[in-house]
Image 1 (spheres, rainbow, N blue to C red):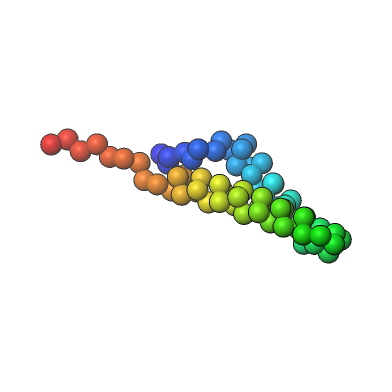
Image 2: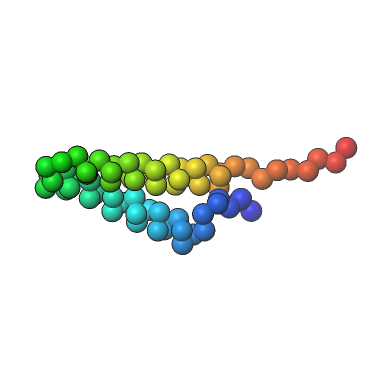
Length: 69
């Protein structure tokens, strides 16, 4: 059995949706808005992507094996 990450399946799904929404919203906002407020969407997308990558790493970590001596 694989180890589970720190996100549940539902949280993981919401993280992906949030990442995709902010990743698509940032270029659109950059085109429509004159100031640099669109950069906030880029930062949020990077933070959410980091959480998803960390959860992937936690899920792929092998389970500890107890060795009996």
